[in-house]
Amino acid sequence: MRLITSIAEMREYQHEADSRGKAIGFVPTMGALHEGHISLIHQAKRQCDTVVVSIFVNPTQFDSQEDLARYPRNLDQDLEVLRPLKVDVTFAPEASELYPEGFSTSVDAGMVAAPLEGTSRPGHFRGVATVVTKLFNIVKPNVAYFGQKDFQQVQVIRRLVEDLNMDVRLSVCPTARESDGVAVSSRNAYLNEEERQAARVINHGLRLAEKIAQAGESSVEKVLDEMYKLYASEPRVHLEYAAIVEPARLTPVQHLSPGCVALVAARVGPARLIDNLIFGPPGASPEMLLQLALTAQPIVDNRALIPGFETEAVKLRIASCRNCAAISTIRLPPREFLTSYVAAHYPDRGAPHGAIIGRDSPINPDMYLYRKPKSPNRFSVGLYELLGVKGFEEFKARYILTDAVRCHATGSHISQNALAYCANHLREELKLFPNIEVLVVLGEDTYSQFQQFLLERRAAEIKPFEEIMKPDGWAREEARVPIFGERSMRIFYCYHPTRGYSRSPSIAKWLG
Image (cartoon, rainbow, N blue to C red; front, side):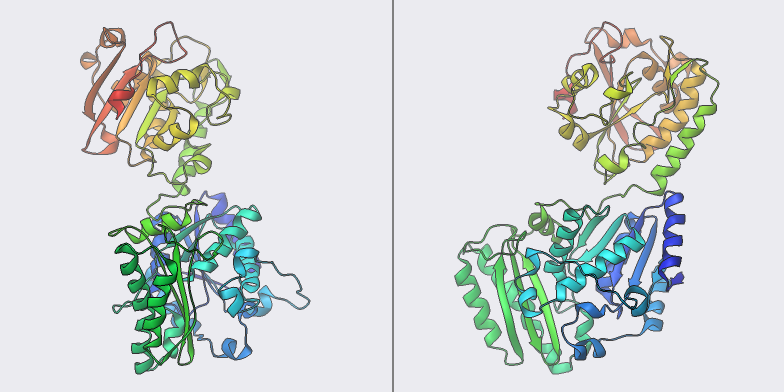
């Protein structure tokens, strides 16, 4: 693990990671690390190639100097927590590094910062928005990780990222809790044993609200009344607010609906604690509840596979095919269908369940499906009809598109040398998407390549393309594709939508 304390060194590390095609996962913290932070770090490690954790007690987000002075700080202890987690970088700058003499700029956190915490802690979110903007600009992460416990902060940062066009995706993870249900927080350390027992009522009030709602009560006023009664029964808990709001703007609602959020802030002894709960159907997972609350602005699913080093490495390997001498006349330089567009269109490599393998799809790169998704052309129209999808958005939600060859040849058929060479890249490209279970193979050249080099069949085992296409105009089989392990896959062979005169009818009803 590398400890970085200066902005210049952090930027140097970021430039190096970016040049190597590594996806950076970023977990911003104020130290005093606990299980909540650790859960975010584990999520970042699952999704990204390299993980940066910042430790910085941000002075501009505290509403009192007393609270700032007593906030727990122990960098050595935090580093001991991080080492076994194999974090790549800990970024721990001094306050003077982020806020040098003469610093005078701040970021207005917008309307979503005004209610609730914004009323209780004036200026708090201005400090949060400012430091998060600075950290994003320094670390330049692909994905930044935040916990649901700070729900209003999450919405402030999501608004910040969208409004200022920041090139970072957010992953929001469910609240980490102690065994008794208390939300994990650095401020729990302020509590003595009795106060710690009393703090349990905060979550109990939220669970009571959930129980009442799932029993059929939709009146927010009635639900809040029951919460107030419970909180009033614990004299060591001093409620600052309990509110039920719609999630995007955090404005109060009168009637409950899935995705509404209950938020609570209370003082217990010397600690100010916050917690929240998202309303949803019985049995809904924490991840599903988060999606319910955050569907207005989609977030990266916590199970997503983030494009990063693997994708870029494949792209670099494919670029080497410029040296391939298998085809003497090339109309266009090699073009990688997936690796050029995966970061933009497939933020979760685990989402697509089908792959389309074509040839010159289409021949004219200006009509490429991903380059101009809203401009129909002969290839896209034919492909959508074949698959039974209505347009590009439905297509990319289910499928990826790649080529049997990396370049555009002038000949009507591709040489075996080229098909063999390009199959190496095709295998690597398909492996980027681990949940593929359906393959649609377009055209004779692609069929030949697929049979020989992906199914690894001998020439004597391969039937002629035209023979298998009769009489239906398409064919299918179930077979094990070695690059995907032992599982059997559904494979469809069809005519290419724009090459030759034969057309395959729609196979939509067999695709499922």
